[in-house]
Length: 214
Length: 290
View 1 (cartoon, rainbow over the protein chains, first blue to last red):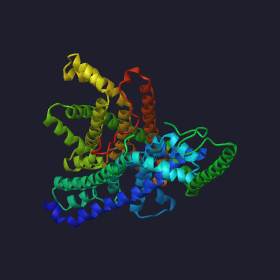
View 2: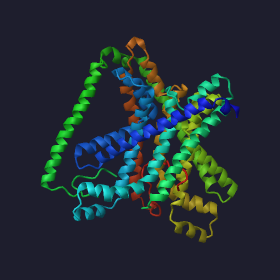
View 3: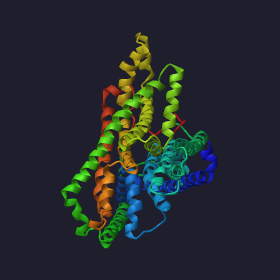
View 4: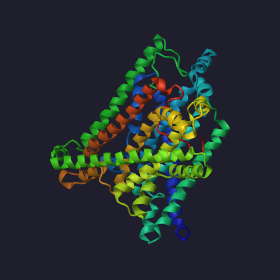
């Protein structure tokens, strides 16, 4: 118990680091995933190819390899950024491919007739998208996005091994200080549980509020 | 599911008329040029920072280095083989627990599955490696097994539960016991329907073997790191990445394609009539949502 109370600031810093990483990477992943999903359903062939390549490659890349390439590789091109930013880029790009797939299958669940009806009422593309297709797609997309973001929070642990401040990384300092290693890990585990359960709870609420089984 | 064809109407777009087709063609040409320009700029950047100089690529000609890479690849595949076999076994055990009629057994299995699914794999691997002082390979395999095993347990359970109710009822009304209903009727159909998901989960396991790099297991990435930090060859980091990543990504892609192919095949299989074949996606269900 005293592992936590005596090192509260260290744990707190690590916890906040993980939360920050998760939030920033989630935002990046959602934005990039949205862009790529719109590429994948666009009527222009080259965008579709771009989206497909992006998703297929990133989905099949081991995240450690991506971290390895981004954190140690990009500086060789003279691009020197703080490690945390690199970690956000790697995590965000990786997760964006999963978000993209979730969004795309969400759009595919909207029946064709909905779009046709909207267009036959004289709605423009923007109106069809914003008032008919996306609101319906959004409902069926909540659980998969939730799962993906939980996976993102868990994957952020890898950043700790590449010397970014986050929760898992705290074990090193603590074991050097001679604290009981098992309890150190118990508190780290609880920290991750708090984050994943929180995301899960948020998405359960969203699902209850807006979710529709299709 | 493939990308919708341009000639097909979707919820988003009508079937394009001749003028729209022409416009799309123009967009297509412009965007292709832009994308190719971006690609060209990246290649130029690679040349500009001297990534293609002979000195950086020479190490790959040496036998010792090739053997080092192959050994790393072998170690990666070995960890993957152990982890996948063990996690399928663990998944089966946990799924039996979750589907059990005995409440305590069910609770224990549920708690285990939910806990290991909510934990980052890396935390488990580090715990086993650092706190329990286990060798890198067993630590990696154990961590992967615990995580993928509990995900697979959920996959198996979903598969068994998704078999049409009539099948179970018919089997019970023939006088079969629960074990017989499970082994003869539900499990064969459920597993068949879940095969694509199971293989996709194995892709996750294969990708996660690269976590071994972080606990100094001598796998593929570790071999790459050794070569990349060699001063004699002018620190060939980018060449190493350019050699390693296609192999890694290619292996995962092959396995993913196998899963998709399996999904398509199983859909046509008359033996899966009573179950919906799951799409080839890793089974990461939202904790708490069934």
